[in-house]
Length: 427
Image 1 (cartoon, rainbow, N blue to C red):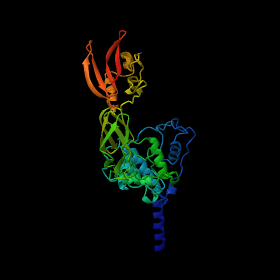
Image 2: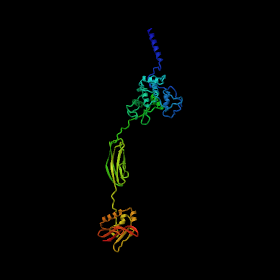
Image 3: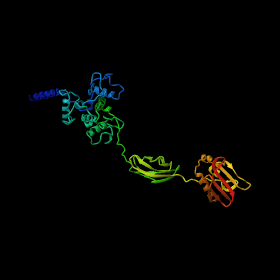
Image 4: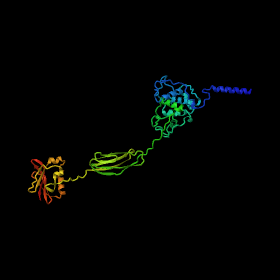
């Protein structure tokens, strides 16, 4: 009698358990995610078969995790609310643990998900105040990361702490974001792996993420590493702090940076006065007399300077041969590069005279310097100045002598043409 009673109680208990929602004792497993409906070709008119998210929309739809915004549209660019994010996380959690997601919505519609999420540790009670607000990508990652246990989010990617450019270590919910990156659920929005945590999340991304959560084979392999640590230039040293050049000349400045292994050791060269001196990669070219400051500057702002002083080159005294008839007497025409307009040489008395037109002198590039040139040439040839006298027209004639010839040098007129007369007589 006692045995029959015990058997009846066990049978009743088994019947009660079979009537519990989601019973059948489904073991927690990723195998619980199975397609329960069919995604037809052209199911949603706004999901192009060639779009990056088309496969994810199909998978998530067939698993019963997402639906369209209408019978024919999915709205891939639309956002979702915090409440909808919770609903997705609760479905993932419930299917994983029980094999089903039987939620009955009440009022407000999201309350059943809030209660389930709090009860199962997906969110803390009071974590969100507005479930109708658009969910940010950070919020979505934080909620979804708690939908499955760590064992179901095995890391397949090595993502160094700090490698996600816009998710700082220690920032809100950064552990959840990194966990999903490492599991291959999140891949970033660009080649650097940026997450855009404060942007709202679009429905196309939602489909991709939930599909990867439910189907490990859809998860992505990526690699993110910390950017190279900056090692900026702290000091620049030039080989010279002062440089003297003549117009047309050039000099080379060499530069050294500290530290020698700086990340970016390139230098930008500049001149404070390019009208005086220019610089290219340390080579300084003198342009005109004056001074300029040459600067070599690193991207970090460290720099060094060199003051460049440019002078006119010393004039080289032109060489002048002697007049053929008067050896040792500098040839004025040869000195200036012109020919005599009149030759007054008289072999009979050994005297000579050469007249040069002023226009020829100026056209050869000489102004008042011709007088200094010829005086210097006479002195360099051994002549000394005897004296000078004033001409009747107000001009001045200079007299030089070397013991062999006397040379008179001054302004004159020839047939109404102004010019310079060189008169030579034996001493």
